Image (cartoon, rainbow over all chains, first blue to last red; front, side, top):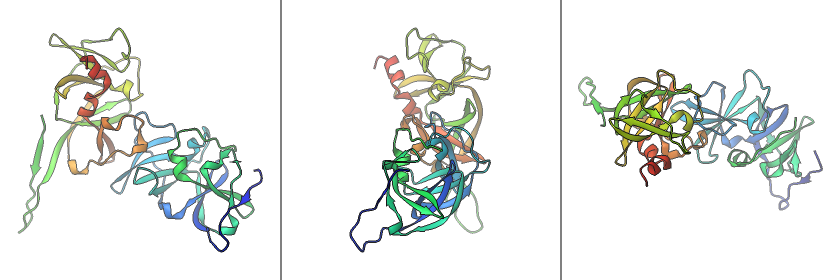
Length: 162
Length: 167
């Protein structure tokens, strides 16, 4: 990771946030807790025709239907992955009212203090800064706070270096 | 032909609003089961008389010869990216009409006819497919099965069908 700069802002303003911490490909990521409606166990979706390569299909959850997005695949990781991944149910992201995000493992809820979140350098673990809201540190490990809307809606490939 | 029946449930001392039901034909393309309503569906045919058009886009659209006439035949396996080199013996043609133009849908197998509550057919998530959303009427659950319901009018407005009729 190259040098990151502190997030800009007017003195006295707080930009801290509560996030959910999870892992993909051995790296730690975070999304806004406010976007996460629920965390559920992974189950096989119904395959949909001509879906994007990182979309596994459609799930029904309590009467609602959601596309299941595999974040490993979105990040270009074609092999491996845990036997029992977790699914974050995200609401208010993009056109669909509900989206399922398949991740390797959900770790915990974390409060990111405003002074602890840095603006990203041009790339973090190979991921371009436009997909990243900020970078932080938890227990000595770097955390990439994702702009999940851009990750889900951009058409270009995103490559995670593991 | 549209088939809707109202199922009236009698409850003690109360008038119950009938639950609308619609017949949906379930069929398989590749490993996935899809559905289509009966509106505009005329017949289910065996795929004899299917020949290839001499020029592209022959992969998605071929020709169905039926009752002395020729009609466009959409190979759903090609459209859905589940293409196979041969037509299975269980394949059938859903012969239908949309926008006044007859056409066929080639499917791998007709599974069954079911009844569904049309109010429970929900929109297909936008992320779920790169295909034209007009091809899909919606999505619903039947037991453990999640079924994508196709839209006959949307499929009938495909450029391959329109161009076949010189549109």
